[in-house]
Image (cartoon, rainbow, N blue to C red; front, side, top):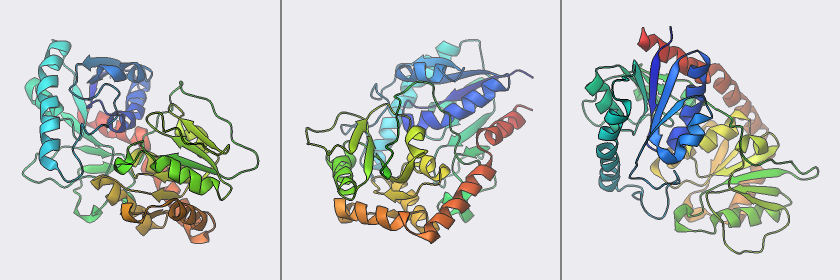
Length: 350
């Protein structure tokens, strides 16, 4: 039966992008899918076949954190106020935008506070979507069905997570747009995916690249903005709109901050990770990556180009790492991805 399913997320790429695969899957199953988020992400959402429902956000227009607008790790009060302002701004706009076109069900990102309010206002069921680790509730939050877009083994403190959470692994959707890319024929490839202000240092992606290039790697940097005027070796490329999948098909290592999207992209392709964590979520992912044997963590105080190079060389030559990556890749395939998520969502419609 064709239903109206409303997906909702704050306009941050790390939260919207993992939901795009579910949007496309629900569209393919014949549902009418709307997707409420900031207007800047409307063209990307529309590529899935879902109908964007844009609102004027209090967040930066580019959908990427930066320039200190979001609290530093550990400043929970400022973060709560930031997302509270977004909730208060979005709620009336979306009540007006949807009007009488009430959805049958809401699927919402785990930090999107206006969505539970709308579900209660309209009297419709909801499904929570978590693009990363399930964070244990601090109070008496209502139990709702939850889709978690990581494999179960990657979840921190998984034994404390309730049965209402379904771990489906990554829910990828590969957009049609974006830059093209071809792999070099004679070099090992490293993908460096770090924001340009990682730990307040604009040079971190470049330092990683220099360390790897010095050992003969071909390095592809995917970052959020133009980097500094450094003279780069010819074996280093910088991109802003290159889909990671095009590089991961040929990569031997990924250097990442540990965001779930980047980490899962690499693990789904069986590529080991060098994780340089920044935020709380990143440290959780980095610890699990190291415990599972699919990568190495380099804490900020230990970061150097030489440390990144040594970790990459160690990982790519280690048989135990390859076996652990094969196990993880098999778990990801068996988790079900977007089809498993859509199955759970359709059950709530019934």
